[in-house]
Amino acid sequence: MPLETYSKKRNFSKTIEPKVKSEATGKNIYVIQEHNASHHHFDLRLEIGGVLKSWAIPKEPPTDSKTKRLAIKVEDHPIDYADFEGEIPEGLYGAGTVKIWDKGTFNPIKIEEKEIIVKIDGKKLKGLFVLLKTSFKGAKNTWLFFKKKE
Ligand code: MN
Image (cartoon, rainbow, N blue to C red; front, side, top):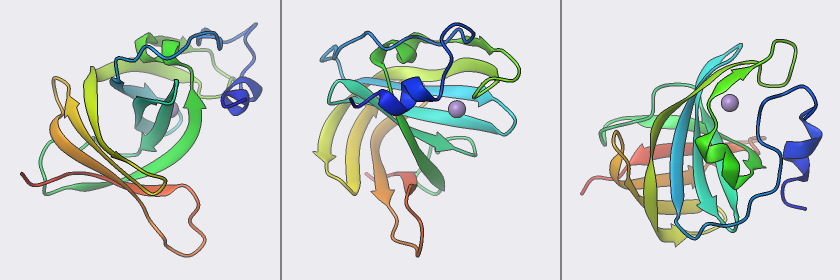
């Protein structure tokens, strides 16, 4: 049950977020949602293995190769989430406004447990991007997200 955590964290009789029902599109969806929650952040999502692999990025995603961003791996999201925009009601998990910041597709160059390289074809992000799992002591979900020099 790859989306069990997603479902457990949400009350679908209250939230307006998508339920789990969708399957892989095979289109390699890329999306970043701006999430104005208790802590403003950006959610990077990539369609891998029939789900949206997801990372929360506390600052604006990098559009050049000079900036490295912290990316916190979060629970897999269902494919339908890629189109989601709206206001998650107060008191619920992730309460706040979700807006699509950038969307497109990607080419998988390298998909490994600790390193993901994708060629992103979005409107704001374009080119080769790297997600690298860090090995700082005690860090479980900490990754770096940056644009590769071309
Ligand atoms: Mn979020």
